[in-house]
Image: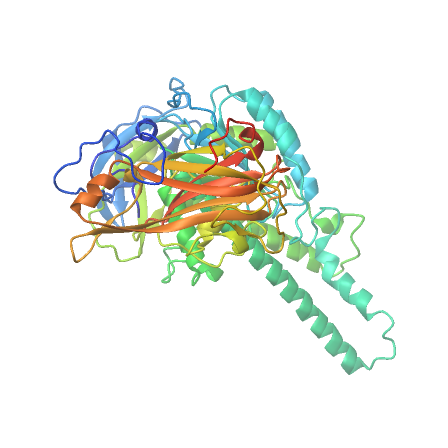
Length: 622
C-alpha cells in the first residue's frame, strides 16, 4: 500500500504547490530552475507507513476527547504494532486555511486546491445512478435544510454520480457557496439502469406484469408451449436485470476509484456521505473468507483496486438510504393482492440485504450507515460531526513482506477504558501490495474519448479523469498557461491534432498554445540494470463541447531514460508545449489538460473554459 509519507523528506501539499510556482518559464525543453542537485541521483521511495483514523464515542454517541497514545493498542494480523505517530483531531480545533497560491498571469491555471493541512474533509456524493428521481428530489430538499444550519468552517465538496462521477462543487467552507450548489446544481436525473427510475411504480410486480402483457392473445397456444414461453420470458427478464445491475456495479466502482484518486492528494481523513436508493456493491473484503473477498467480488480485481485506493486516501464511507423510511409495498392500495406473501418476503429480504451491505461498508471503512429515517439532514450533520473528531495512529508494519494479502487491523483501548463501553470505528484492513497498477477496459468515459485520446495505454483511470466535468486529480501538481496564437482564423487543424471522426470539426479554427510545468518530485523513476533512471509520462489536451463530447485532442508519450547528467537537468522541472485547434465559434467548449505518470498511475488535470482565454492577448503566430 502506498503511504502519504515519503522516506526522503515529508513534503506537505501546500509547500509542494509553492515549489511548483518557483519553476521558471514555459517551453518545450527543460528549464534551468533554482535547484542544486547533488552529485548522486536521489530516488524518492515511499515508506510503508499505515495510517488509521479512529473515532471514539461514548454510550450516548458523543465523541471522546483527550485520549493519549498509550491508551491504544494496534494489531495487524494479530501482531502488535508500535504506533510511531499519534494525533487527535477535533471539530473544536481552530479553523485553519490552506495556503493560497500567489497571483497568476492571465491564462495561467493550476490543479492545486488550498485545503487545510489538518482536519477532516467532507464529501456529499449524490447518486442518481442507483436512486429514483423522486428520492433524489427528497435528498435535495433535505440537504437544503442541512445547509441552512451548517457550521461555518465545515469543508464540504459535492459530487454527482450517473454513469460517471461529476464534480459539482469543490471543497469550500462558505455556507453561501454550499447553499448555492445544493439549490442550483443538484438536479434530479433518471437512471436508465433502474427498474423504476421515476420511483412511481411497484418494481416487485414488474416482471409478472411484463410477462402477462406479452402473453396476451396467446389463448390458442398449448400448455406446453405456454410454459416454455413463460420460462423463456422469466429468464430474459432475469438476465436483463442482472446485466443492468452489473453495469451499475461497474459504474459505481469506477466512480469510487476516481473519487479516491482525487481525494488521495489531500492530507487527513475524508468523510464520504453517499446518498443512494440502492447499494449494489460491498467494496471491502471479508478476511473470514479464504479468497479475501465476498460473493461476486471474489475474482474481480476492480474491487481490490477500489479497496486499496480508499485505504490510501483515508476515506470513511457514510452510506445514507435516500429512500428514507421505507414501508412494505404489499400494504399499498396500488399493489395487487398477494395471498402467499411473496412480495412482502421479497421486500424484507431486499431491505435486509441492502442494510447489511450499508452497515458492512461503513464498519469496514470507519464510517456509519443511516437508514430507516426520513430526517436525512440530521444524518448528514451526525456523519460530519462523527467524522470530524478522530485520532490518527500510524505504524510501520512489523511484517514488511509485500505478499499481496489482505492485512486485518484491530484497534482496542487499554486498561479501564476498555470497560467504559466506548465504541471505536476505523478501517479494518488493507491490501499490502501497491494500488498503483492501472485497470483497463472501462465501461465509462466521455463520448468520443476513444477516438481522440492521444495516450498509448488508455487505462480506465485516465479515461475517467480526462472526461469533461470529472474531478480534477491533484496527484501531480502542475501549472498550465493557455493562450491564443495569432489573430487570423485558420482553415487547417494544428499539427498532431486528432479530431473525432464521428463529429468532424469545421473551419475556421483558432489555435491555442498549451504550456505545462510540473515538479519532478511527482514522477516515479526506476533504476535499471545499466544504472540509468527510467520512467514514462503522458501529456494530453482534449477539447470538449458543452455536452461533454470529445471533439479534438493532442498529446504525447515521453519515455524517460536518464544518466546522472540527464537526471540533474530533469530535476529543474518538467515542461511540455502543445497546440490545439478550436472552432472559432466555440466559446462554450472546454479544454481538459492532463499529465499522467505511467509507472505510479498518478495524474494531474486542469479544465479550462475556452471563454476564459479566447480574448486574451495572443502569442505571435509562427
